[in-house]
Image 1: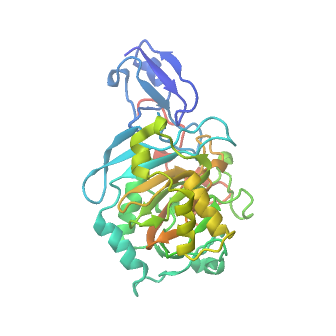
Image 2: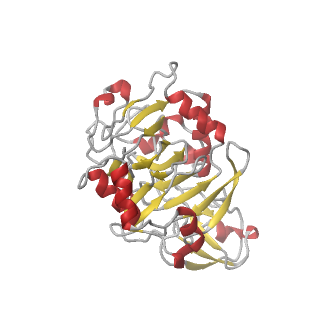
Image 3: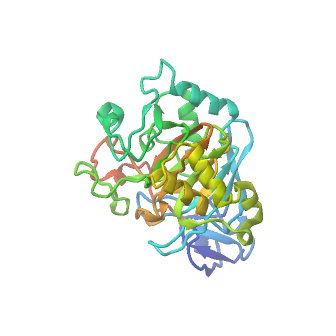
Length: 379
């Protein structure tokens, strides 16, 4: 090939048409990806006019999946779920270059867990052999439970949670997430323990960010845009179906429309009438005017994803340039019928808090070569 449409990392904005007369000119463009997240090694590996995406440009930033368009579904080469099926990534939102008024970057992940894996996470969360078994949920703290974080409880998070920090299954699933994210390698210090959640009737978590503020503490550099580290992406695992409620909501984003994707609207569900919503709130025992009842109404007015056992969603807490993405605000909608089981799998852009081996004020400097941008072209 002699030319391509070249987008920035993540596919923001309009592309530029680039031309190259030979391999050397192509490689001078630096690492490029196709829309399947594969590294494009030479101009012989695509057709003229194909959309390509620049790689990350500085240490601590990473490849981000381009949205392409709402409803765009792609099989991910080389990544398979626990049931042996190829994982598929489906675009749910189309973020823009507007840092404070964009949709978040959200994808639906098909076939991520097998039923057996989902059941094992649920079982282990209450098992006697788990030193971090089910307890009232915490939030807002950067410290692990064994560092004093178990007392950081919030009135706006009413679920219970456990952690899986050591089982072979948790490590297998985290490696799967790193491959899905195209991180280039796996590093245990770049992921939290998997947080397993149980939401009973009426329980919820108010809208929040998964990342920590850049001034969270003085003993760690929290700003990824300056070589620091923070939570980069969340893979939220659905471990059960829920009869009503329990969605993951993004309150700053509008609901999907049939013009965007009729198939997605049918699958994710349309909003019930207001009378039905109020009946749900009453049956779940939520007080009128409470944050839980307000969140329930928002969950049916804004963009929200209902749980489906074995699937997951991916959303990014950082923009491709390393700045924290305020648009990633999200909440766990109250459960209106049944019980919701889920799990947070948080991947950091570099060594997470307390896990850096040299200087916690320069986390990105510790990245192994396979994960440290920028990368040369062709490899």
